[in-house]
Amino acid sequence: MIKFRNDIYFSGMKKIVITSLLVAASISTASAQTVTGRFELGNPDRAALSIPKEFSFDEVPYLIMYDSNDNNTIQVYNESLEVVRNISMKEEVPFHYQLTYEDETRDIIAVNEVGRSQFCRFDSYEAFVENEKNIDPSFSESWLIITDLGDGTKKVKVDYSNTRFTTNEQMYYAYDFFGMQYPKVYFVDSPDGFIGYKAMYAAQYSEWKISGTRTESRNKPQKRIRMCNINLNQGDGRANTYFEVSQTLFNEDDSFEYIMPKYKLSTSGNFPQHSIGGESESGLETTKSTLISEQNEIALAGFQVLSENGDVVSDITFDDGFEGVINNMDCAFLITIGNSRYLAFDGYCNSESSTIFFKIDNKKNNAIEKVKIAPSKMKVFPTIVSNGSTINVNLGDDNKDGSDIVVTSVSGAPVRKIRIPAGQSSAKISAHTSSGIYCISRIQQGRIAETQKIIVDD
Image 1 (cartoon, one colour):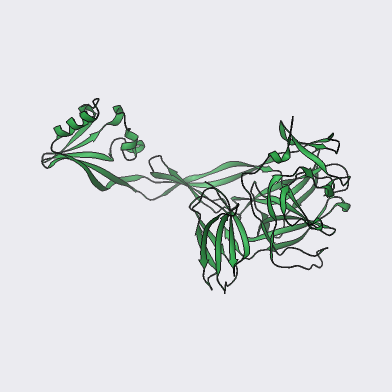
Image 2: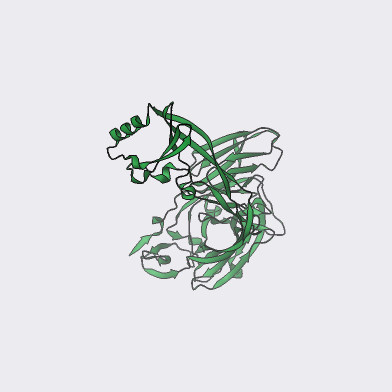
């Protein structure tokens, strides 16, 4: 059984913006004509049905299918629909790393009733009991816990163990800590009547104390990098599909190659240092752990070109402070201009949003040379956040004419818009939205100047 490659879809789409795109027909590291502007690479949201013909050994398209039982095996068909190659690729390579945390603890030194409101009144205790039996014939006075407060006043709590409508866990504050010590509902029996109250409580804590440090081992799979083909010579203005294997992109033989990522730990990626609270089910926080590893964020450190038999034919490590973005929906963009081919990756260079370009010369057999790191002005951080988190936007200039910041979903639906007045170069946005990928765009004089993407993760 087989299945077409475009049976596999992503759950969302993305928009990537490249600034300072190389636009000369032939570009070298010695001299280059560049235009600084905005370049929209497209929305590669589905698999292509073929290897681009410019990257096939015979310069003819091949039909590409996944094996129905193994998405890592690609079957290559010729024009007669004959299988000419079965390519078994690595799906992922594990990236093992460790993070160190500092643990802290604190004690609960008191619980205070901070408010209560009356919700019912009876003339007497007996009237209350009669009312409860009318509502629930199974009610028994044995459920009541009565404490004498003196001066003819009694406090009445309820043991909900045998009730049908609720539980002690629901009706007592921090039940897992204190049991039935702090009722959310209780009654006061006094000469003024039998009155029911709803109560609110707050815990009082001691200072945090360091209890030690610990190291956790983690693992993140390094998945294959998808390539999105933009051949300007054929009029392709943007990428719509991705492909995974090629024959002649990296060399001129008839074997197939694909790309695997290389990860590393970084000090300045997308994830800030954070604390992990030890909040209990009742909401009491008596433990917390703070991430103290200096390098605690995963970034793309480079990539490897692998042959179909698994051999590494090229090993590229990013330099000059560039770190690629890690995201399962990210792709490498393959841009063909004249006789030149460039592989582009989005990321950060010295904490500035940037794109790195590599020139590929297949006639020199796997020759891959970095030619440019193109920064963008606007910086958005962090780019991976949880719902409700704050996102910082730094425009990177004096914003003399003012700007609008627009947040949209990957489908283009507007989510939020804020105005940054002239002279103000930064703003904060709250990510109150559902999980997914969103685009943050800077609008100047009615036109999009720059766009960055963020991921909201529940």
